[in-house]
Every structure is written in C-alpha cells, then in structure tokens.
Length: 565
Image 1 (cartoon, rainbow, N blue to C red):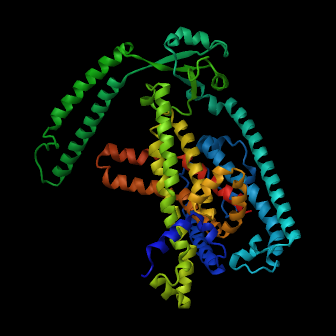
Image 2: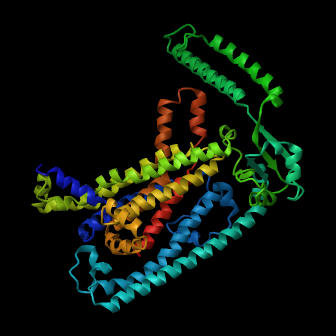
Image 3: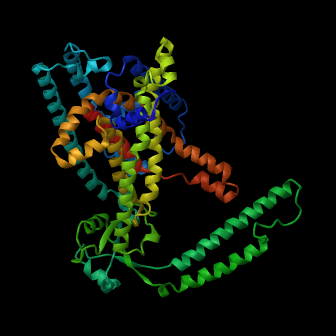
C-alpha cells in the first residue's frame, strides 16, 4: 500500500462530511443496499408471522399481513393495550403512527411532483443526485420556487400533525388520571418529596403544609437511613446464594457418585457453618426492624393522597420559598424508587449531575473519531491509485461491484455498531447522576441520547467541512449556521437513503426479536445461572425495556426524514 500519512489524514479530516461525500451515490450502490436490507426485512417478517404464539403477553392480531396496519389508524386510548404494555408502550405506537401520518401523505404527493422537476433539469449530476435539487442549474428560478413551495407545505403539514398530537396527549393524560386501571395502583397516589428542611421534617408539619390539596395527604412516611440494615440484608442474601451454590454442587457430585461427603466452599466453610451465619444475621435483622425509629431521618418523605389527580396537582406546585427545597417526584411504579440515592442532598445531586453532563458532552464530541474512521470506507472510491487493492478492484467489473457494496453497505453497518456501543456507556454514566427514581433516569437518558444521535448521525456526517473549521465559523457568526446546513444537507441525502434503509431493518429485527436481551439472557443462563434461584431469576425476570434508548432512535430517524424531504 503506497498511501502516505498525509493522504490518510486528509481522508479522516474530511470524514466529518462523509454524507456530503456520498453525493452522486451510484444507483448500483443504492440498489445493492436496497436488496440486502429488503431481504433481511422480508425474512424477519416471514419468521415473525410464522411463529406467533398465543401465550404471549399481548393481544394477537387477526391473521393476514395487513392486520397490524389496519389497526394503527384506530389507535385510541386502548385500556387493554395500556394494561399489557403500559403508557410508554402505548405512546411508542402513537409515535410510529405519527411518523406514518407525516411521511406517507408527503411521499405520495410531494415526491411525484418534485422528481420530474429535478430529473428534467438537465444538469450534469450523476447517480441519485439526478433525482434531487442537486441536479438544478443556476437560473432555473421556477424549479427552485417549486422546491420552496414544497418545503413550506411540508413544514406546515408537520406542524399541524405535531400540534394535533400534543393536544391529544393532554387529553389522554387527563382521561388516564381518572381511569380505574390507573387510580387503583397505590403508586399513582403517592408523591416523593425530597430536600425537606429540618424544620419541616415532621409528619404534622408536612400534613399542615399540604392540607390545601384536597385535605392533604392521608398517609406520610418519613424516610430513614437504614443503610446499616441494608448491608446486613445484602450480606445475608449473599450467604443464602453461597449456601444454595454449595448444596447444588453437592447434589451434582453425589449424583455422579464422585463425592460422598459435604463439599466445602472456596472459603473452606461447610454448609452448616454458612447456615448458622444466616441464622445470626436473621436475628440481627429482626432486632433492627423492631427499632426502626432509632435510624436517622432522611430529608425526604412519601406522601399518599386520596386520588391520583391530587397527587398530580402537588407535582405542579412550588411548595417552599427556598429554591431546590421540597422537590416533588412522581412514582411511576412500585419499584421506581432508587433507595440508595434518597440520602443525597440537593447540592450532591447537582455536583453529580454537573460532572456526568460534562462527561457525556465530552464523550459525545470525541465519539466523532471512531465515526470518522467509517468515512474511510464511504470514500473508498476516492482512494483509487493510492491503495493497491482498491486499484485492483477498480480494474474489473466484478471488483467495481464489490466496491459499490463496500461503499453503500459497510459504512452504515459499522456506524450502527458504534451506535449500539454508545448507549451502554451513556446508561452507566446517567445512573450515577443521583436521580431518585428510575423514570427520571430514563428521561435523562432519552434527552442525552437524542442529542448524541442528532449531532453524530445527522449533523456531523452532513457538514462537508471539518469540525474544527465549522465550529469557529458558527461561534463567530451564529447566523451562519442555517447557511452551512442549507449548503450541505441537500448533498447528504444520498447517504441517508442507505442509512434509513439499514435502520428500518435493524430496528425492526431488534424490536421484534429483542436480540440483545435474548443474547444476554442466553449468556446468563449458560455462565451464571448455576443454581435454582439464579435459573428462576433469569427465566422470570425479563430485562426492563429501556424506553430512553428506544424513543430517541425513532425520533432521530423522523428528524432525518424531515430534513431529507
């Protein structure tokens, strides 16, 4: 390979705009991507259609390929669906329906009007650029006016759909608060209040402060620092698991007739000694539970109100004149509270959040490096004459076909792998923010992940100049940002055709089959579940759906579709 470092550096530096470099993407590359992704999609759909099981925790659709599609327009406040999948799952279906309502009519009306307008412009654009306004020539004012009118129609229609959905969201929320399926849950009537001043950390004082809300709370629980008791319980649980593991191994060895006496654990202890330690810990736990008032009070409390509407009203009101005091939190489920974070003060949570946000911003910015490396493959045709194997492939028809596959398929596959890796790192960081509820973690995760996806998947790969050049230009003149995007986004549309196809297939497969969770559960069963307790845990306790990682992916795809239009 006779490619020097300067050539490699120039290639990586330009990778910030690799989508722009994909202008002129050949029809061959696009059709190759379409064939591969389409085959995968059809295979997944056929597989799912053939193995629908009646024992799933969802209502089975009517037979036929059109059954799911015909039900989407009728999606309303479905109590059965909400009971089975929760409000998050219900609104995710509404998100998909909203995307269909946006882009199906636009595809049916706008594209047939604009394609002839661009195709007959007569410019020298190549490949798929002939179908976009990159094929227009200077002076063709009437054709540019056609694109402008179409853009205004798209913006107006999208705004109309969004306003309609926001109104429907408010209506559904109000109706859901009064539904019996929601109000019967005790968590719907409970509000967690954190950062309570010491002067108000009394049940009588809290009852008096909240008395104006429908008579006040019917029950009040002030949280206490039971960390010492928690440590004893955790130690007891570890010993129980150890005892179970030792006895299970003893049964295995006895069954094989290889061992006829009690087997010792790694610490040299017998099952009887472990059992005695468990009994001692049970006595300590029982003793501390009887004297619960001896534990130190924490600056937080749970308030239970008469109905969910009152609890919802409490969340909307500032209860104290001191900033960051008496902060209310809605409890989304019975297991929503993160007990270990209740002891944190507001300033501790603030510092944790500040540090984590800084880490996320730094990671988001520097993640461009591995993403930029995928630009090497998206620009492989430009390395002709610099890399020997690229030169050899370019000299034959079969080699050029392989180059088309590499340029149209592999970069998006590598980009998708990087997109799978980042959420796990982000989730580990967000969990350390000090949030008191798991639902707050999901909301924080959703916001950070969407910003990352929009910056890295759309903006970074769309801007043709290097990042080091664009950022100073935008900072010096903020008004230049629209012109930069207006110059480069139209050229990037070819790249996103392949990317949207890939995401449509991968997200379909990942969502329907839950592949990461299935693989993880299989590994746990193979390597970790060596006792009946662990085996039962793997089978019955499914991984919680991380909606904070699901919503941003589809929202970002919708944003890309909007800009491509």
